[in-house]
Image 1 (cartoon, rainbow, N blue to C red):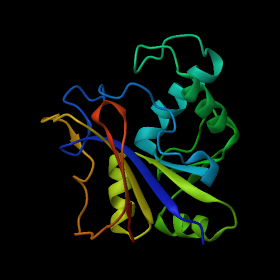
Image 2 (image 1 turned 180 degrees about the vertical axis):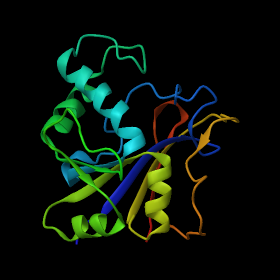
Image 3 (image 1 turned 90 degrees about the horizontal axis):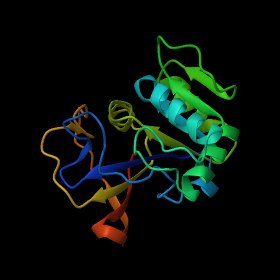
Image 4 (image 1 turned 30 degrees about the vertical axis):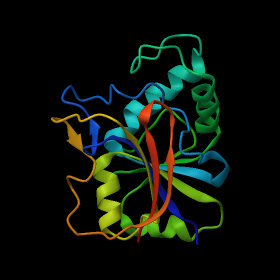
Length: 191
């Protein structure tokens, strides 16, 4: 069975967005999780998909232009992810959204559809987010691995990753790796 791997960039106090509604501490949105060789599909919630599609489409179409979310030109690693995103099927969990610009976007309606997707042949599936989707799929027992990159700051106000989690989840620490700039990569087994 394919694994569902969630990857999120958070502050030390567990926020995925600051008080202004953006993760302005993140310098780039490249594959810092090392997940590209391991996955052949991405899963997102409908709330996150529109911005995700717009961001990566702009990187694909104008790789020399500053990205709207960071204000910086895309890094080579972001350009690489943009190419990966363009050729990789994306699944959007939504009961209301049914159209997308990307031709390889599919819409799924419920938890059973995600369980079915995990049973299909292929590589693992990257749960890109958002926070509410990640929390609900963790509660449903569908997340197999949680990869976090923790930034060395306290956001205070902002959107917590686990605000919507309804149950206690014991996770198994699989790896810890210090990264540049005081960041830490944590990998946990879940489910």
